[in-house]
Image 1 (cartoon, one colour):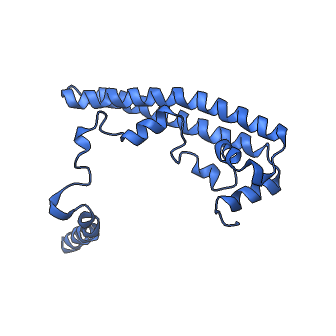
Image 2 (spheres, one colour):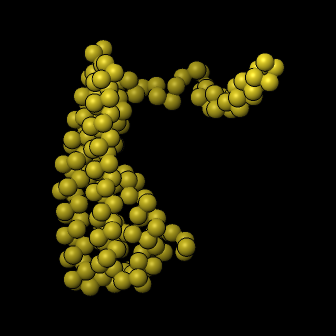
Image 3 (tube, rainbow, N blue to C red):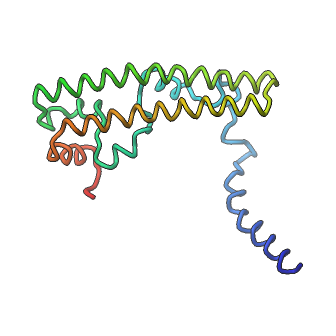
Length: 175
């Protein structure tokens, strides 16, 4: 019994730093003010990013491993020495990515709005929560997959030398 008590105390003590991280000056939560958002889980910036097909860091696995995104390649077209053909192909990818991700982002906003309504109305149930999470999770995966897919396609248009220059321009160290 003493060993069990000691183990429980050790676990509780190890969590103390984590608990301390959640205390804030004046006792306010870092979420204070979020309760006034139209969709509690999304900031105005996140909504704008979703509505405009921006990446929001969803493609970092690609970006930081040498798979450039089409927008940033177009921004650095001159420094990368893109040919007219490359520029045209990357611009087509960017347009396609925007068209695809704006639609998915709009669906995600609506799904988050629905979840928020379930909680704010007090009508949420375990089954409704499970359904909402499955739907939102699938949409988030689809959105992230879309962004990653266009990074993959963009890299296939660039030469290895252009990809190396891109990484340098973006401030990424050589691997």
